[in-house]
Image 1 (tube, rainbow over the protein chains, first blue to last red):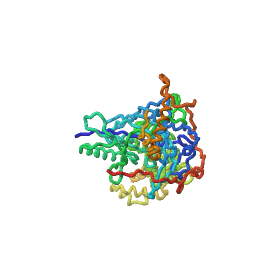
Image 2: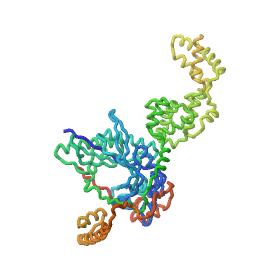
Image 3: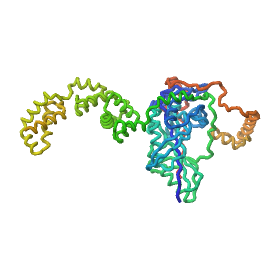
Image 4: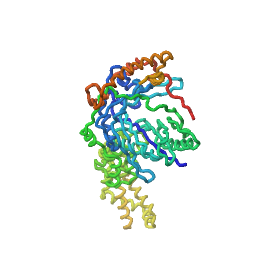
Length: 476
Length: 100
């Protein structure tokens, strides 16, 4: 019997704001427990939550980037649940009137293009973080309580784990390039829940769905969905029934494990949040935000490949993060040759970041520095070899490349009136190399270049030296 | 709407409240009369009246995204019955895995 899978995804993004969604507590990552909270986060009596305007702004950016319809009127609702990660005993979310509906993301899987619908997206608050001890206690840190989240709910449009994977990659890239979120799975700024049901081919009504939460990588999403497809098929084929349940992916065994069976769906007793006024989102504001929307990864890719002539591979490496793409754009805007800038970004800069385990934002190198250095290489002032020294100094200490080159006397020696007599002298002193050259030994040139480099302490322009040597040797 | 003992048991469980058997009967009767009182509202004709989610006359109240420190950890943790290393200490809350 053949089965068809139906997959839907819920993705939470932490929005990049300075303060929380309903209180001015700072949004931090890695701060000491319970140091970034206030009375609103704790839900103390008499406090008044107030909506952070930037949470809407960033959410609207994502809505625009996914072609979603932004609702002109929204409001917040209370989702009631008792759990120590949230001292209010309810989460403030948007249940009845979300930020936006009916968006889509385009994916390409197995050579086929497909649109995956976005059912809705809404803004809400995150809960605190629990750590479970082995001594019968759990430990709660409320720093994350009230951090703004955008939840993006897909339509159940995906039919296999590869489509789910492609959707996640695309959605992540879209959100990343709006700048609305850091989209880091490992830091929890992007979190994925999936649900999957299967049904015999030809059957119209969907099967019972199983939900999986807290998947910590895209690969786990793919593996767990693939496992579920098989497991559910076996259950159905052996005459069993699928339970409406939540399962989790066990990394070690590669299997999914039952967490709990769901009884009765909506026990959250949602009702409109009485402390927060309804929000009207004007078209003028949306238009204003649309004007500030950064170029998408797809648009940038098009520029890189078709305008700058970069190889698709190089373009994709630059587009791995918005930061590196922004940096590259900055260097090109400052006058750098795009191909050279891409080469430097993808080899030297990335190499440095990997070796030192730092982010682009943490180093002192600026796009202007990179552009200046590339100009120095291009106009022959410094050799690529010297450039590596300049680069090491600039990225480490933020030293201006031009100034550094001048101060250290690193300017490349291209002056013919100096190099010509030097070449003659070296050739005169090495008759054996002349002999070797005439016998077709290319190594002879390398040896002579080395002699000149030695004499000029590496400053001679290798291109000029090679040219002069060839001329001189040919004339002998 | 008729409030039954099962409704009360269900709501109590959701609210993490424990009632004795004699209390269930009492709350069922009380809750039933409260709900019925509130149900008088449904006799009002609301045909054509737009639904509202707010009774206070406010609209679109935003705050600028500015981070401020209000209370210190120590001030807030005064309300915490049990703590350890800056964390709030609570009885273990993970749900037990039932492997299939």
